Image (cartoon, rainbow, N blue to C red; front, side, top):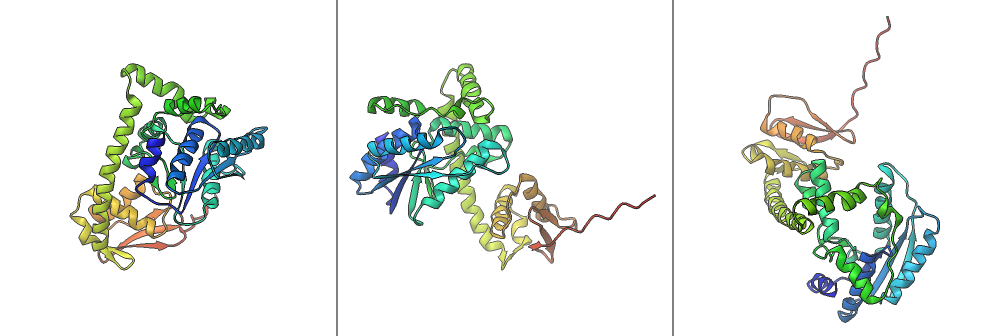
Length: 320
């Protein structure tokens, strides 16, 4: 555990070192290792405990986790209480609330918050991406460093964090939600991955994590090439289609995705990108492509432009 954290921290210096602590084995073992390594590097460590307030007694559990983090070496520990609301179910709403609270607790751009995601979490993420057909970005899994988030344990099995807690003599808190089969990740963890391990004679989690690393390297290369192509195609806020037309479609769509995000587009799907790409690679004089947020991509005089306009209202049905 300490070696994984040391290899993560030594190449980069952070002004502030935070650890997200749930009270579970992953975050407790990470807290001890971070405090051990961080202090040797002259970096103070702060523990951040999010109280989702979804269960009776959650405030007590959060306070106990904060106290345990201090015993494991954290210089300070804070509890962040959140309200879990919004669309997408409890699992998604809790995740949004947790990340928002952690981000707001950071003091500046050179702060990092370490998360206890392990190799097993990475494998679950890759499987989710495969099952949903979300493309290579989801199959690439989680990045070790994705500021302000740091994940030193992506090559460490979950079993090692439990062994570390046993060696430290601490009793991790078991979140009841982690055994609730209503949640997709719980079913992946308790049913799908064990079955795959049995059918494929083991090593599945490690193989999926390796796949994520390989796909991520490929994506970073394609993104680098796309950035250069985007710079050549830009004409102010517009894009010159003749620069893009002769390029591979996969590279074009990466250029278009970055351009659209820069223009304020959100919630882009593969279908959106393919429709916009057809304005370049399959141009037949078709109309603009509507995107979420009342944005539309138009082609005129060999240029693509993003415009904001309200859709035309549908005509009222005529009476009999």
